[in-house]
Length: 314
Image 1 (cartoon, rainbow, N blue to C red):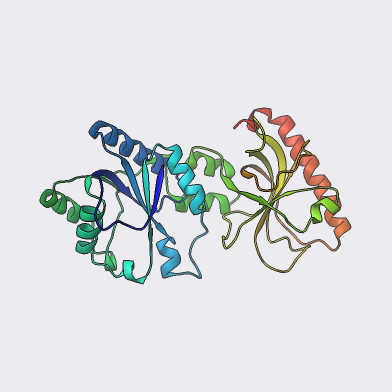
Image 2 (cartoon, rainbow, N blue to C red):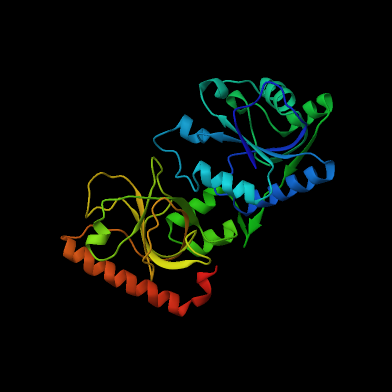
């Protein structure tokens, strides 16, 4: 998949396009992308996604924006896996937010991306003050010669599939519900970096994934499977949170202790699948107490995998 920052002044090819944040690339997104790629193949054109960075809600309400389900890198990997040919990442800033709906149609859709066919979600709005809607796009399509289709809401087990619903499931520690909405276990991917080596000192070395500026959508201690280090997935136990016993920085970090793994994995890009919550993160009175709890967590995770051996491949 080709990735572009910003919108070109003039497109080099016509496109079948969809627009959205695609946070988490859940089942609803996947259904939309399936329509996109199918239409693109039928027309012999690239399947193109236009997405935004930062998330518009992060721009308008930075202090109370929702937790992201996926980083930009993770989102791009998921879009690539869905068969998208091109992704344009548009910077959402004051200039873009103030753009009129008509200007967005003419400058972005028609001239910049040469849209031939457009798929949107049924709640899609665009332009300053959200003045643009499906009817406006249909009218523009008749003028400029592109088709417009709306993707109806998808439901799973009677629930509307949305990024908000996935976040709510994760916040409620309902990993099963989140997996049903996503079509897979919730996961976080990132590069393994050097940490403070505290886990190694305690006898439980960990692969550390910095969350950078990201606020995670879940927290606590989990039984996890990890891919990216060997042919299959590796079982482990993970803590995602701010490590209150070790530091008061308040910075979120994902730490994974891999079972039966002794090799160096610094610099590797791994994906951590969250399968079962063991407990909430909490502060201990001493490192000895923390060490004892980590041992119990590891035992509990091993016991869970022994009872659910199929989940290591899930």
